[in-house]
Amino acid sequence: MQIVKMLVDRHTRKSPENCICCELLPVNIGKITRTEVVRCSSIDCNSGYSLIRITSDAEHNVDKFIWSKPETAEKCSVVKIGYNQYLAAVTNNNCRLARFITESGCFMTSATFNPKVNYGYIWTLLSPNSTCITNLTDKMRDAGYIIRKVSSKNLNMDLTLTEKQDEALKCAFDAGYYDVPKGVRTEDLCKTLGRSKSTVSVMLRDAEKKVIGLYLGLNIGSASR
Image 1 (tube, rainbow, N blue to C red):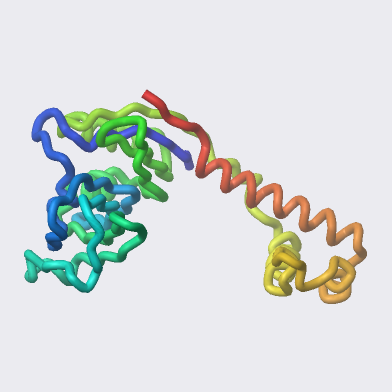
Image 2: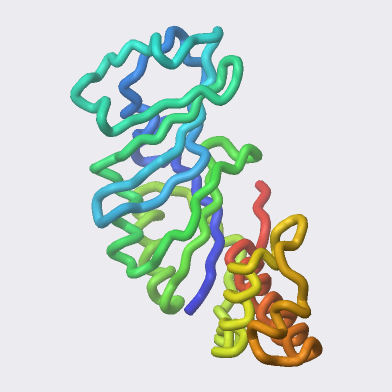
């Protein structure tokens, strides 16, 4: 299995559009100066779900929003996050990119906005093999999307926790070992697990290393253009 990061320009050359998800917004809050998709994910073979940041020209109250498209209001929710900033969650039931991802056999773990590139987004994908990624990128390029692979890494099976490591990590987490301040001492974990302090310390350190390694693997690379 591969972890792949790539830069995707959602402003296609064949059918230029700002962003179809933004066009689904059913609200009218006066003069919207900017909309940008900050994160999205695929739901099924035809649907996608996006978080959209809205910047308005003046302060408005959420309860004063004018729902200009009542028929789609249930597919969008908006919350105020700043003086003139809003965050909208929008469901797109006709998402071409979601269909491409599903048909390719890949899984999207994140899609975040890249402010360095107009309409640019960083996708993180899990792919069973390189063929699936190739199928996805070929379809997207044929549709006019500009894509650049940022990084690719094989998922190391050594990152899998052993049964003892899994037990120690869950026990420590549930007991508040990673809380601030700590809810339990290492000595107390030793009694619960029935092992020596040195053994528990090694088990936790090895488990933490694997979890952090997996996290970094899913977030490898950076993009610029």
